[in-house]
Image (cartoon, rainbow, N blue to C red):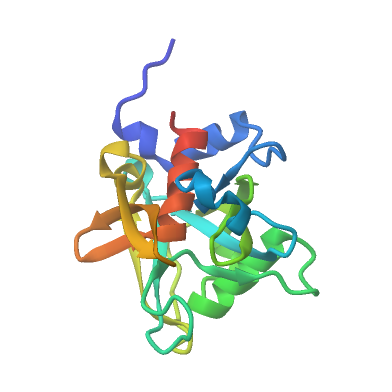
Length: 211
C-alpha cells in the first residue's frame, strides 16, 4: 500500500482524488450556518432562499497548493470588507451553478475558465443571510493573471490548503445577533480574518474530504 507524505495530502492531485472518491453533491447532506445554531434553524432554512454559487479555486502548486480568496470591496452595501470566495447569485441565464461560479470568478477577479478544471461540487450551504450557496470545486493551473473588479473586490490572496484543512485552525467564535448569541467558524490567517459563511464552507470542505 502506498503511504502518502503529509505534504502530499495537500497537493492538487490529492485534492482531485478525494473529490473523485466522494459522492459530493449529496442531496441529503445538511450544511449551513444553522449547524452551529440549531435553535435558529427555522430562521435560516426556509423556502425563500436565493440561489448563489461560489468557486473554491485550489491552485496547483504541487505539494504546497493554495486556495484563492478575495476581500470584498469596502464600498459594497452588504458584507463589505469580508473575506470571500469568488462568486455570487445564480442568474437566469446561467445554465448551472458551475457556469455561475465561473462567470462570477471572471467578473470579480479576471480568472478565465481556461485555467480552471471543475472537479465537483459540495452539497449546498445555507446562510443566515438568506442564500443557498453551491460550492463548486476547481483546480487552477498556475500562470494566470488576475484583474480585479474594483467595484466588487479590494484584494485577492492565496492561503495554503494545508492551513485551511487543519482543524486546529478552525476556531469557534460568536457574536450577538438580534439579541441572541450566534456561533460561527473563524480561521485567522496572518492579517486576514476568515470567518462566517466562507469559514463555514471551508469547514464543510474539510469534513467532506479530509476527515
